[in-house]
Length: 140
Image (cartoon, rainbow, N blue to C red; front, side):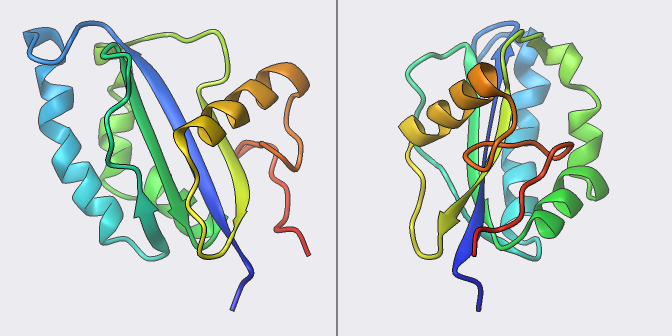
């Protein structure tokens, strides 16, 4: 059994607040996409708390591998929602998605997710925070 799991965080800036018709379809898709993630191979956990800024869609989860996370993100029905993000979100100039390894059995905090995004902004991809395009192997 692996000693590490893969944590991921992604944020998006909403075009409007929850309840506004401009983003209603996005919020209608959230429960379906969350259920899809939770039933996907390799899924371990997802953050279910509130995020302080109502204009930020915040997602963080833990997976058993990059392969399983990648399959969910790019090869499941999730991709249909992902392709439509520009309808509901405004571009973010800073890092909006990060991956990092966590010890099996531990769950990342919101602060750790935000720190991973900051690391990408400050240093680019490193073992501490990386992307699907620039991956780092599980630490030994």
